[in-house]
Image 1 (cartoon, helix red, strand yellow):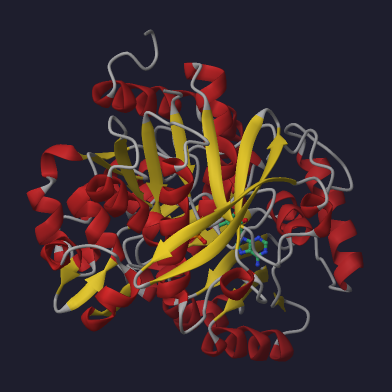
Image 2: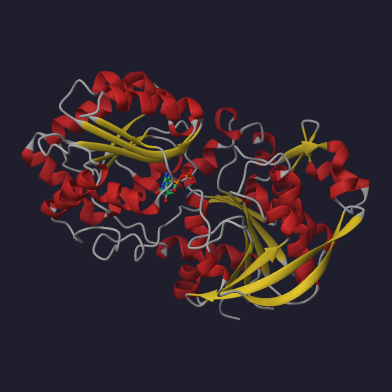
Length: 476
Ligand code: ADP
């Protein structure tokens, strides 16, 4: 057997809609480097993946995928990148479309993906000791691995990156999508629906989520999106392991998107800010601190709180830029605010890696007042670029950001506890006060030196978890 297969719906550098892609794009390398594990990754081959990658892919095989009462074909391609082997599942009908998610038949698309993964393993192209699936889009691979046993000794791990998205479908599609006995409906069913995420929670040998605090939070109804009873049942097998980031990739010292690279000099952050202002035709005012957001525009990210207080906050001597795409309500709100405050606010309603990096580098403060946040990578990236996060104390935000304490001089950002707009406003104003106090500001900035968010420690925890399932894995 040969170690681990990651099953996921997105990964940098090929395709990204959020933090999941960052994790899948960096954890395999960390496991290789720190734990000497061989990790391969299997992804859908979306049309959206840039040509430069498609040109490098090599045809591996075509497989017949049993899918409910019919067979569908899938073609598997491979590509080696940074010493990691990637497999891509091609099927024109399901994946040759614009974008990644958001189709009425997403359930069918990703159940098909899981069937293709299992068939690929059954055909013997790769024999992992552990199948490690991520989020609902890959969840059915765990269900099928456990029931159909394409490889008799293979164990399964499932990681919840966000419990809000569960992949729910009407129960009467069971025969259409699954060639399983009806006795297996029970493992997949939740509240009268087929629920992919619940299926994986039921079947996986081990369950992880992406921060210790979130692992606790999702045992309770406010955070569990209805699944807390299942998590209590599996309590012994659930562990929270904090995400890391690829600190070589997110490194202000070498980031190719920046106009000036830097280690810690604020003067160089300022140059980046002025250049970004020119690029955006936005009047950057160096007397005013810059607050930014880089985010999906969705309720999870605390945008209702921001809506409540931002206009009031803009009466202060500050500037604000948001980069994000998502729900129309929020796009309209930020566009209208920027229209009314052209000197103070700008809304960049697009998904753009380069702009994201430039904002992380240019800003003084990074806002992330999430309603819930499984781990959050954006605040970690902000810290790498020496930008102070202002966060709500939830999930991974709580595990990674400590509010600045004027008495002890400790802390790497600002935080507030309750999901309350004026508590956010208060934190943003406190941050402004600290910014205007040279001693405290210098202290806060020097505290960034202590940030350690590489994958090293967490890779070790994953290694230990895998070893519990397959004792011979690491040293065998
Ligand atoms: P989530 O996975 O919930 O979206 P994370 O904080 O874990 O949140 O990860 C978000 C990732 O997506 C970060 O790498 C962030 O920089 C990136 N991102 C979010 N929105 C945009 C955007 N509009 N343009 C470029 N990158 C974005």
